[in-house]
Image (cartoon, rainbow, N blue to C red; front, top):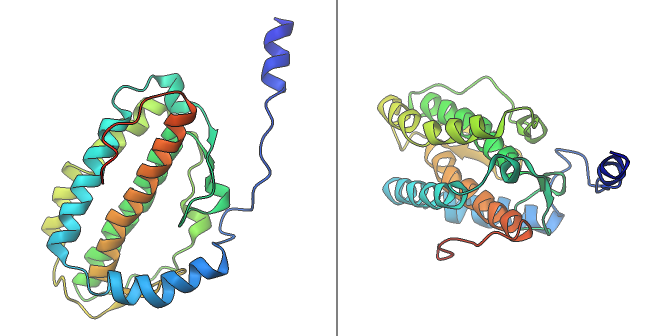
Amino acid sequence: MLNQITTQTSVKVPQLQAPGAGLPWYHNLMLKYYVGPFVAGRSDWNVNEQTFHKVNGRILKEIESLTEKQLSTKILVPPQLGLEDSSRYWSVAMVLEHLVIVTEQVYKGVIELSNGRVPPVKVDIAKVKPLGSMPPLEAVEEFKLLVSEDFKKFLLQVGDKNSKLTLLHPWFGPFKARQWFWLLGMHHGLHLKQIREIKKRLSMPEIDKQF
């Protein structure tokens, strides 16, 4: 019993920046002045949809063999482009919880913008971090539902995919519905990489690295 207590209390929590602290300034410049207007701004809706499905298929493959313990183990991953410092010490379940939180909000935002309404919200990065309180297996099921049935319902409510209305993203600037939709695939791809880094440190094999 004493050995168990010693092991548990010896785990050091890494000192990371606060949620919402943002990215390095040079990352912000690239996102705001190149990625936002030229990559997201010129993206094609159908291509973005294909990317979204492809990435989610790979996330599902990566998590399908994980045990509840592996899903819930927090792992510190190396710094990663597009990933806030505070997000580097998550479990796979926390990553999935975060994806559910963000994607549900993006679904709503795209629906509003594409139907001629600007959502009366201010996007806050700090408020979409996972609490880590969602049970691991529930996080898996919520994610599966999010990218299947919820996605189908989302598409049925999308109006004008080329709407000119915008909602401000704190990193990218004003984003139209199509740019927010592009962000879904990019965001899920970012966290696919994080899941693979977590698994690597759990001594788990990576699946299908080709993206």
